[in-house]
Amino acid sequence: MNPLIVVSAVCVFDPVGRLLTVRKRGTDKFMHPGGKPEAGETAAQTAARELAEEVGIVLAAEELVLLGIWFADAANEAATQIQATVFTAPGVWSAHPSAEIAEIRWLDLAGKLPDDLAPLLTDHVLPALAGQTGESPAG
Image (cartoon, rainbow, N blue to C red; front, side, top):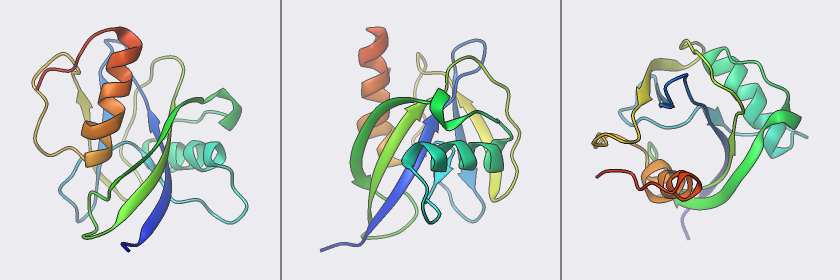
């Protein structure tokens, strides 16, 4: 059985509806801001802490809205699965890379999707977001 990493992630949108993606240093896949829990943290507390650390967005854990929980292939670790609890952040935001984030990119969900997105994003989150808006992501 493959190793399993538990993570939390957050969908953040800018004023024109683009989704924030980040690329961590030393990796080539873009994903949500997020990461692994510290001892005693809930999934929402992990998501809120990682959001502040990675892109400078400060939001209370209670304000995050659960989108779903999925299993997916880890983007940057071979033969590893993640169990991701994914939230959406209410409102619109601007962000800047910090901590281990090398680069941020705002993703236009109506446009052609790049081929460097994490499996969690392409296989689970984008379809879930499309279901909320009634639109399907272009591919």
